[in-house]
Amino acid sequence: MVNSITLNGANVAAFSQGSAGIWDVHIRIGGAAGTGLQSDTCPKTSAKQTTPKTESIAASLLLHIIEKASAYIENSWMRTADHELDLSDHSQINVYAGHGVLVEWQGPIWLWGTISEHHQLYNYQVSNAANGFMGWIQTETPYQQSSPTALVPCMPQDSWNNPDFSTCTEASCKKSWGLHVMNTSDLFMHGAGLQSCLNTEDCQEKKVEIACSDVHIYDCCRDYY
Image (cartoon, rainbow, N blue to C red; front, side, top):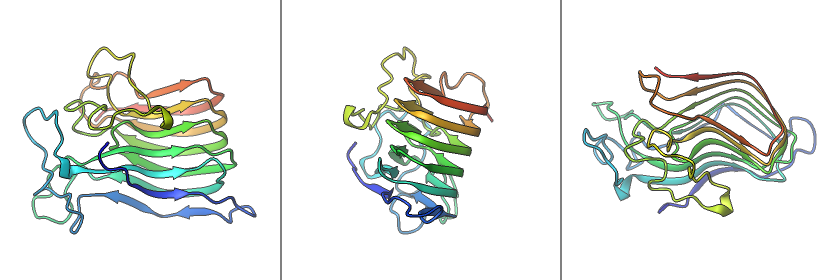
C-alpha cells in the first residue's frame, strides 16, 4: 500500500463506565471538495481497471482500536467514498483505502450502530482481541472489486494479520471481507448487514471468516442489491 495513513485511533482506557467513547462521527475518505479524491481525478472507469491511479490511493486504515483501549462507539460511519458529493455529476468514483476498522482490544468495548464501507482488504477485522460487543454493524464491499481484486493495491502484511486470500481460486473470492475474526475470545454480535452492492447473488463468494475464535453471532444477513 503506497499510502500508510491511519486516520483515527482509540488508544485510551476508560477510567469509569462510558468515560471513553466516540459518538456520531463520520470518517470519510474522498468524494468531497478539498480532498483531491473526486470524480474529476478518481472517476469510475467502464473498462476493467486492474491498476489503480496512484493519486486515488488515499489511506491505509480508517480506525484502529488498540490492545489496551476500552471504548463505547455509537452511530459512527467509517467510509471510503464511492460517489461524488460536491461536483455536479454526483457520479461513482474509485478511491482506495486498505483497511476499515481494526480492533485489537482486550475490552471491554462496545460498537453499536457502526458502519464500515468500501475498504480493500476488510471492513471489520477483530484480531487477538477479547471481551467485546458489536451490534447493528453494516458493511459494503468496494464497488470496483474484482477489477481490481482486494490484493490491489494492498499487499497483505503478516504484522497486521491481514487476510491473504490464499485459499481463493476465483476473483469473486478475492474481495473485501465484511467481517474477519481471528484469535479472539468472548466476542458477541447482534445484528450484522454485510452488503455486496450488486444485483446478483453470486458476485462475492465469502463475506465472513472466523478462525481460532470464540464468537457468538445472532442475526447476520448477507445482502445483495
